[in-house]
Image (cartoon, rainbow, N blue to C red; front, side, top):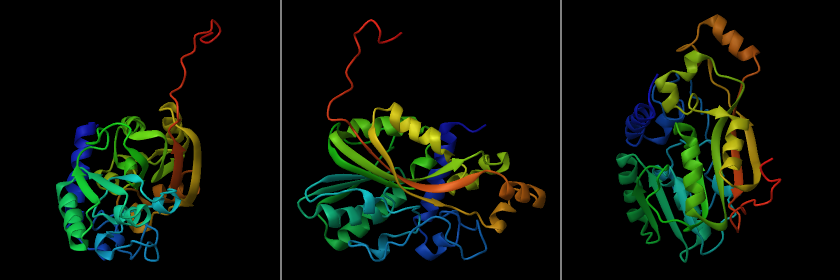
Length: 282
């Protein structure tokens, strides 16, 4: 069984390759996992092209939703984009927060940071920056962000609990996040879950939807809302890399579902009060 650090290295290597590819190459594969599918088939991403702030050079086709569309960003906000890639969601957030706001993108792949910075400099944005770092331990201070967004990234992180804990630390009291991610209903076949390429391709790193929402609750967030949900279908030519025909038929006829969800939640204005009454822990 691979360790968390080994899984992270798989993702880093794969996304270093993806940073050098164009959108068309990434969209014809499994969330950017090159060669994953021979079909021209965009498994995850939604269409950004009509959204203000969209920059084609920054769109690698790696998302699974439109978190900025639901993020309730206001003028002057400080927005943090987790797993910022080439800068697509960060630039859209910048269009919403305006020149008086601030956007910080965080990514742990150096090649992605380099590409995002080139895109930023080409557009002359002086209120958008990209920092290399682990989203489990963000290179930012506590209580700094008005809004956090992320697009198809947390499912790639082995320790999702640590990510939500750090999101809570970084958000201001009363602030919120809107995150698009991949979740499951029912269990993936072992062959899919253990495959490194599928892990880098966003699917086998996903966890159960109920477990995902519980992680958010257990880290202190309130007013949790699934803003959007859509089913994701894996093409047969991808499944054949991991399952035989009998396994594919069983997978399709079972109760397993793979979904893209966009989830909103708020950090309370006040920390939860400690319970001192005798009946509290009974």
